[in-house]
Image (cartoon, rainbow, N blue to C red; front, top):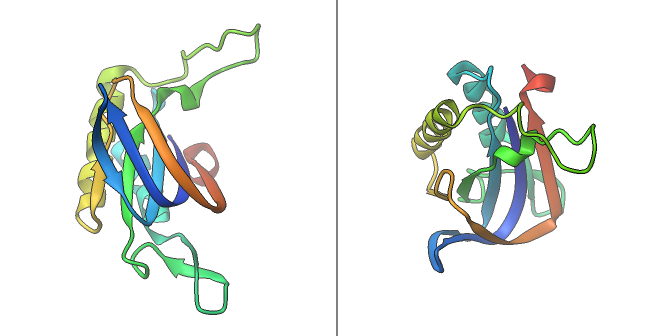
Length: 148
C-alpha cells in the first residue's frame, strides 16, 4: 500500500465537471493498493498518516499534527501509484490490487479516518480532476514495503 501525502492549503476533486470533494488546510492523500494488502497494513499506514507532525508551529518548526491545526483529509484512490516502468515506455499496472480489493480497502481507510477527522473523497475508478495548492511544497510517501 502506498500513500502520497501532500500538505495543502486547499484541495478539491472534480468528477464530470462537478466538485465532489473539497478541503481547506490539511492533507491530500493519493492511495494505491497492491494485491497483497490487508486491513492490518492499512491500519499501520493510517496511524502513521494521522500522527504526522508536518505543520509549522509558532517557531516555524514542523511540529504540529493534523489534529493540532484542525485539518481535513481529501482521500483519492490512485492505482497508478503501482506503475511499473522497468520495460519500455508504457507502464504496467499488474502490481496494483484488483479493483474489488482496492475499493474495499479504500472504503475501509475512509471509514477509519472519518472516526477522527473531516474526510472528503474522490470516486473510486472515476476519471477525476484533482486540484491542490501544495503548502511548502511538502510531500511525503508512505510505502507499506518500507514501514510494515
